[in-house]
Length: 124
Image (cartoon, rainbow, N blue to C red; front, side):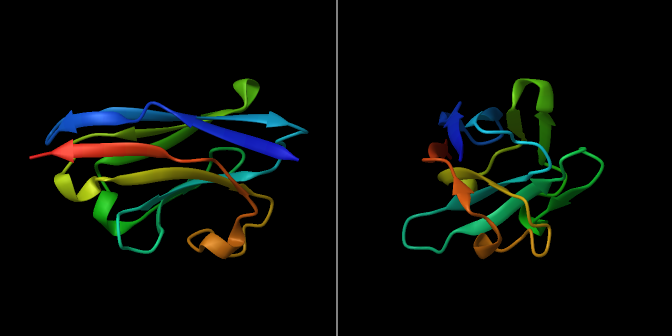
């Protein structure tokens, strides 16, 4: 089984930037799509961005288009979420996820592997 560990969260002022990392370990990660979701207090977990195994295709939720970008380094078994122009409404716990299925990448049910989450807090 693949395990995921996020790092890089923290506190940042509005307009600032953060980069989250998601390191995969365990059996082969080959072919897996990777995604980031977030969950704010009292809200459901929501899709943020996703990337295919080859990095040829990415998907972005509308609220983060033009501000967030996803990338991965398969040689290092690591994915990244670069967050720029952060807003207070971006405050949430951010989770990375992985799946062999590309059927519905914006749905949490598509993913069977999750990290433990990283807190991102954006102050106004």
